[in-house]
Structures are given as C-alpha cells and as structure tokens.
Image (tube, rainbow, N blue to C red):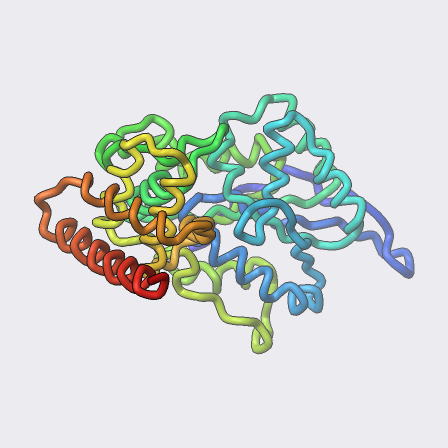
Length: 326
C-alpha cells in the first residue's frame, strides 16, 4: 500500500526551460530505506532497467564507489561529511530531468546527519519536486536479516559489523529498535529532506507494482523483471558459527578466509559474503579452517550438523590438494 503525505511545496517552482519554452519542474524520487527491506532488489531492478526508464524520462544515474550494489551511496557519505557537493553536481548534470535515486543508508545513518548537512540537502533540492520512497518490512524477519548482515560483514570504522552479540542482544539495541519503528517517523524524514510527500510500501505487498505506478510506468512490457530475493540471508546455523568465530578475535585475513570457505561450501546467495572470495594460500586456509571450526561449540542439532558438513567438505578438499601436491 502506498500512502502520500500532504504537499509541502508550492506548484510553481521552476528549475529550467525545455525546448519551446515549456517550464519543467525537476522531479526526484528518492528511496531512503528501510535497510534490509528489498533495497538490493530495487537497486538492481533500477540498474537493469536504466535504458527503459530513460524512455519514460526517468533517469537512474550510474553509481560508483566500493558498494557491491548499484546505489547512490554518495548521498550518505556527503551528508556525513557535512556537504552535498556530489548531489549538487548531479542535479546540474541532469537539469530538467526526472531522477530516481536510492540509498537505504539515508535512514540507517539519519541521526548522524548534522542540521547543517540536512540544510545543505534541502538547499540543493529547493527547486525540485522531491518525493521519498520508504519500503517497510515485518519486524521479526527484518531484524533477523539485519542481524545476519551485522554478523557477516567485515568490520569498518563507521559501522558496528563483525560482532559476536546474540540475536536477543541485537534485538534490544537502541538503534535497532529505532530503525524498526522508522515507518512512524515519515513526517520527520519529509521535513528533514524537504520532500513534498512520502510513499510507504511494504515488502510483503506488490511493492514493485506500487513503485511502477508511482513512477507513472504504464506500459512495462520491456521491463526486466525483479528477482524475488536479490540478497538472501544464510541459514541461522551458519550465522551462529560466524558469530562464534567473530568472538575469537582472529586476524581479519584469517576470518576472511574462513568465511570465504563457508560461502564456497554452502553456496550462500548473500551480498555480504560476496566480499569473501580471494584466498591467497588455499592449503593454509583449509588447515586454519579446520582448527577454527574445532573451537565452535553448540549442542543444537542443526548447528552440530552444519559443523560436521563443513568439516567434511574441508577435509575432502584438503586431502585432494595434498594428493595433487605429492
């Protein structure tokens, strides 16, 4: 279901003049979150249909940076740094053209944006017709998915990744509870970003159909379909194994090699696991994998079974490598 708030801007704002002298307001559709609520699917769909969207006068700009997903992460990065330089340059490059942008981190990092940063954002978009898109998700499935990401993803200076807290501990974190209730704060987001309206969608509904309607896409025969699960979380027993490995305070390369082998053995379709690919010394990594796995403890049948399966696959590969070397 899509809900739209009342207008907050007048209807006569002009950003340029098209050929023939017809005035045109630049419309921006900005997807701001929720993290782990079809964000990867939405971004891949937009990127895969970039050329089709152009025919409908909607532009999904090319993305850059270290992200594995085709999203506009610069929006978050610039706001954290206290400016909107990249956005200003983008709006100039696409003057008089309607834009579709996506960065779920805008909600996730919202409370870290300074008043000055948000003021700069509103100033950049003051002559645009800005509409926010927010996709919500049932809390329990959402928190488990977010938990998986926090356990799997490598640690960095800005985000609390690669932790060893349990699901219950994670669920009680203040920021998690705040994120889980963000659908009640849409008016706050509208005001902060200077948007005219917000469209509230839900993962459990036909969110892509609703998005197409919002964008005014009537004839969609040439659209590339959207994958049902673009970013699928590993099963809970694998998450528990990685959680315990996080608690071992291993060197990042050792941890990376371990998770890379888990990804290889379990064929997990998770973007967070996609960074764990390169293993420089496979034989050494296999030996280390078995040693680390021996330190994982559980009496849960599914976890015990997962440990046994991973050990068997690793031992088999290790023996093959040694046989080839000898």
